[in-house]
Image 1 (spheres, rainbow, N blue to C red):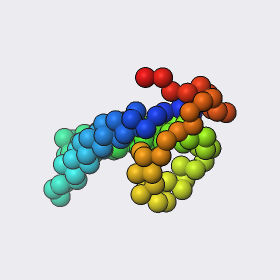
Image 2 (cartoon, rainbow, N blue to C red; image 1 turned 45 degrees about the horizontal axis):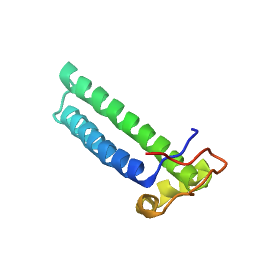
Image 3 (cartoon, helix red, strand yellow; image 1 turned 180 degrees about the vertical axis):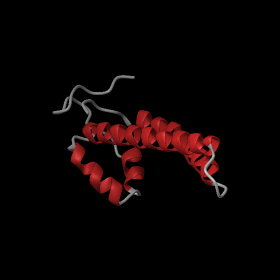
Image 4 (cartoon, rainbow, N blue to C red; image 1 turned 30 degrees about the vertical axis):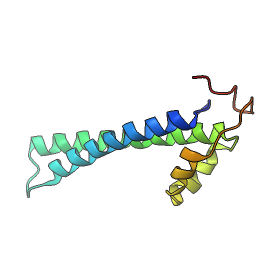
Length: 108
């Protein structure tokens, strides 16, 4: 993943992904209710799992790009996975103003 993402873009992406994640959880729980797995329940389980996977991968990509804006390696995302409170730090900590090793500064 190459590029940088500013604080505002990261925060907006988190808000959108939170809604998408909630939708995935809703579909997944709707498919898991009941004793038997009929075709409709399997469809909801499949859709919910897909939405959860897409939202996680999008969050991962956005977090790596945000770390790049702060001139950190993308491998620091493992620390963010272990301590989710660091997402708040990523939303508030300013990025590097000029060029860094991950590209030019963000333009709005």
